Structures are given as structure tokens and as C-alpha cells.
Amino acid sequence: MNFNHKRCAALALGAALMLAAPAWADTPPMRVILPVGPGSGVDTIVRAAQVALAKALNQPVVIENLPGAGGITGTSALVKAAPDGNTIAVISNNHAVNPSVFKKLPYDSLNDITPISVVGGSPFLLVVNPKLVSARNAKELQAFLKIKPEEHNYASSGNGTVIHLAGEMVIDALGVEVRHVPYKGMGPMITDIMAGQLEMGVASVPSVQGQLKSGTLRAIGVLGKSRVASLPDLPTFAEQGFPEVDVMGWFAVVAPARLPAAQVKRIHEAVVVAFADPEVKAAMAKQDNVINPSTPEAARQFLKAEQERFAKIVVKANVKLD
Image (cartoon, rainbow, N blue to C red; front, side, top):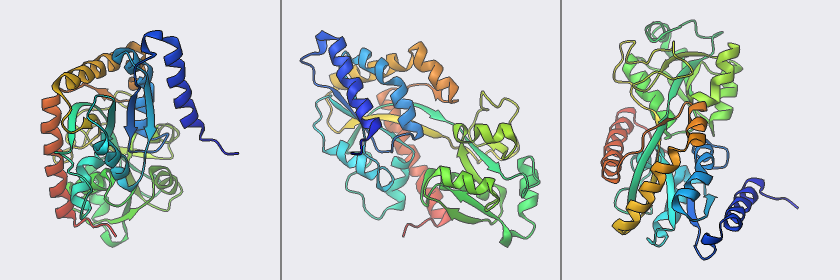
């Protein structure tokens, strides 16, 4: 028989928490929907905070991975859930991208959710194969790509993903033309860049830390506003003269629409407490995640602004999904 070990582990943890805390015996669990697969960046973040979140909520927490269609599958499940304070989801950039790259969504990405908090973010880097690309910084990369532009390429983890749009943001800022090659996931993309099948791509820090240390990949710059703690000598693209490049992977806690204000307050306070837990903070720092939970009001404004910003990038880059 085949077992989903991660799902079994999540259920086992939920059961253990219920056994460990008799006060929770009659409390329904908090269902945390992740519109991503096990082992992804958001999945790792949420699982690191699972125990602390359960303690802060004073109820068991059960994580449910519902990947598919760029996050649409999981988000569809969230919006259909009862607004009773027992179901939340942790979404990321693709939630703000999807309205622009899909012709029709089965929900309204802003009005069918209740924002709780934009909890934090994960920095992106532009990395290159050092055997194919001689450039060591953004200006050198710009000059390199302007030579025989028809021969250059960059990879992304999928057409219409935030990684794709982050790459388009870099290409547009550098004022060059580079062929986009989409992959199904960051792992295969990084493998082929290392193998010399592709020249460069945008990646999360944890996914390339080992390759940067070994020298099989070279980082050109950080795509966000701030440098990365584990790579203090690597400047941002803004520091290198390209302030238009400003994107990072963020994650936010949301609930179904029409969640009562008292529940919004309860969940928000629990999220803040959970991510301030020393063990959780240490786990986040190890992955170079930046944690700064927003208010529900700020989260709503942020999600709206991000949706509008990515819409402009999609139009400018003429991004289309098959």
C-alpha cells in the first residue's frame, strides 16, 4: 500500500495536539489550506509554525495541501468554506497574479476572501550558470545580454508564475530581449541551469544556497528592496542602478469572505504570536524569510496593490497561458 507520509504526519500531529491538550477535546481543528504541494516554500513555512499556531489559537491545527492550477484549487476550497473561524488559507504571489493570466477564475480574488495578515516574504535572486555567463553584476549582465540577443535565454518555474513575472521585470529593467523557457517547477529549472541547458533564472534563496556555495551557480543580485542576511555581500538590483526591480515571494493568511470581526481579531492575534515564537523565528531566519505580520486592513490594501501591479507586468510582457 502507498501512504502519503506528509499527510499522515500532519494528521498525527493534529491528533497528538488534541491528546496533549484536554481543553481542546471539544474544539474543532483549525483547517489550514495550502494551495501548494508538500515541500514547497510556503508549505515549509507553515509547518514550521504549526505547533506555535495551535498553541496561540488554543485549538488543534490541521494542514491540508490542495495544489493545482497555480493555486486556484486550494483557494476555491477556501472560498467555499464556512466563515466560522475554523478555516484559513496561506496564499502567496500567484493569488495576485492569477486574475491577470487566467481568463476566468471561479472566485473573486479580493471580494471572496477575508485578509488576515501578510505575514512575511522570501527573497528572490537572479542566478546564472557561471560557465555560460561571464557577468558578475547587473551592469555586466546587461552588456552581456545585448550581444547576440537572439541566443540568450532565461528559465522560470512555469508560465504565468511569479518567478516568470519576476524574470520579465528584470529583463524589462535591463532593456534587453531574452527568450523565456518555462519549466514545471523550480527544481527542474535549477537542474538545467546548472547543467548548462539554460543561462539563468530567478530562484528562491533556499533552493540555490548549496549551488551558490559550491560555485555551480552565481548570483547577480537580489530582486527585493533589501539584501539577504545569508548573502550580505550580494547587492540588490536597485543598488546596482535598476530600482524598477522590486519583487519578493510573500505569503499571507486569509479566510473566507464575511468572517466576523471577532474571528478576524482572534486569528490575527494568534498569527502574530505564533510567528514571534523563538523556535519559529529561528526557522524563518534559517530560510532567510523576513517576518513582519501586517494588520488585516493593510493586508487588504497590499493584495489589491499587488494584483494591480502584476496586471501591468502581464500586459507589458504579453504573458499568455495556453
